[in-house]
Image (cartoon, rainbow, N blue to C red):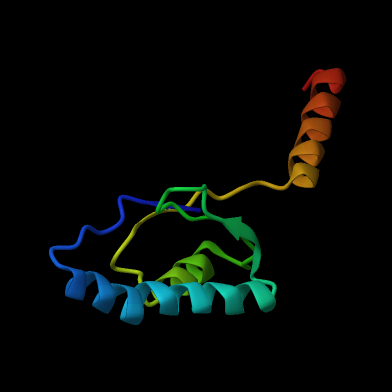
Length: 104
C-alpha cells in the first residue's frame, strides 16, 4: 500500500490539530497492527509523507476495513496493490508448463 499527497496546513494550530488527532493516532494504530501481525513490514521513505505497508489480510474487504478504521483515513490518498504470492505464481507457471507440454 502507498499513501501520497498528504495534507497541507493553513496555520500552525491546524497542523497541531491534525497531528494530534489524526497523524499521531494513525501511527499508533499502525504500530498496533504491526504488533498484531497484520502489518508485516512498513515504513516511510526519508523526507516524505508517503507510507508503504505490506499487510496480511484474508480478503481485499478486510484491507479496506483496516484502512478505513485508521484515524487519518480521510487525510491521505490510498493506493492498494494486491500481491500474488511467489508460491502461487510458481504453481500457476508449473500448470501452464504442464499444459503446454501436454499439447492442450
